[in-house]
Length: 278
Length: 263
Image (cartoon, rainbow over all chains, first blue to last red; front, side, top):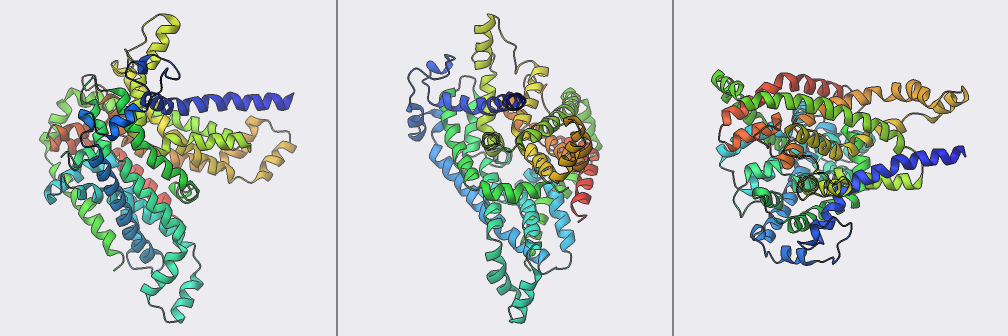
């Protein structure tokens, strides 16, 4: 009896948690497979579920979707470039600070942490001004570089933590064998750090794909905006077609969710433990 | 040499912009204009409420749910995988979805209210107070999973023997929490709350994508107000908005940096 009561109490928490989590998600899905008329019927499942909305999206058959494929391409390009550059910058910095113990490493680490903690929406204002000065506004590079700036502090920090855990004997053995620091980096360090590198690359990639604020500040030309900004345009008028917006939103949201779950093993271990130290 | 790329990024995209921005913000006149803007006062009040209510509510829920998710049951483990979705997916689709749900005429919530009670539901997003409350809910919906995971990790690090010993001594569930769990995760709880305070201050999406600052610019927080000034081409005001928040943000940032570089 006691056991039954305890189990029931857990379900009493679990079911509200499940509903709270899934209702907004299910709402997207429901709209995306509904026709315009049935979308507002209040049913839990549409009378005639349809994939028509996705057809409209993929064939760019709506005013807001004329640049859909171009925007997807921009999103992809920006996310990939951010991932690659962040990885390169952060791996080098973490190696130098953690393994080579370069002078001023601590200061650099503090500079990175400072950037990490300052709210991104605050940094956006001076960054916008600076991008204007550099003449980068409306170039996809402005968003890539902004996202590299935002992603690399955390990347360096996590990679440094991971790298500090590698045994020092490896470095010594390599040095005795006459390896240069560069060989040490390439032959010993990179292979051992691979899981963390995968996690960090994914982190930077998702951060850039998901970003809205910087994207809509820095890019406004219809040929350079990523899909996130394109989605925002739907709300510029009150009578925007919800069912088509939700179908587009689903297409936009699914890839990052899939990537997140595919790499969850790395993400949960590598990232949440690094987020807050006790 | 290897450290140069990051130094370059930092100098070009953080150090120079921030210094230049602060230099731009030195003009007292822009603060005068800012303080004279009635929207600004409203925004400060909104921001304070947002921080106090949303962050604390979020952490009490996270503390409670982390206790739920540490149960070793298969269905609870599956639920924790689902529970992380709001944090794993991008902000726009889900916030727009919630925005539609709350639409007073067509949204599913008011339709449901009408069908059940034959009355018109509240104007969720056109009443400023309600709209702020909804923005807080959106923020909590999105950020709760992350902090629950963090507190869960804290709870899992507590040695089991402590609980077993407490059980032998006949401790109640509340006593176990008070004398075993809380002392072990208190530091983590406080650190996380402070970090979350800073980040919540910079939460642009939950407010902007839900209300856009409407109605009549009554639902801004500092993060969205700064961006609003940029869109109005009033860059000095935008910088001033941020400088006003610095006396609050910088001590918290400094505290966090101390915490992290201690080890």
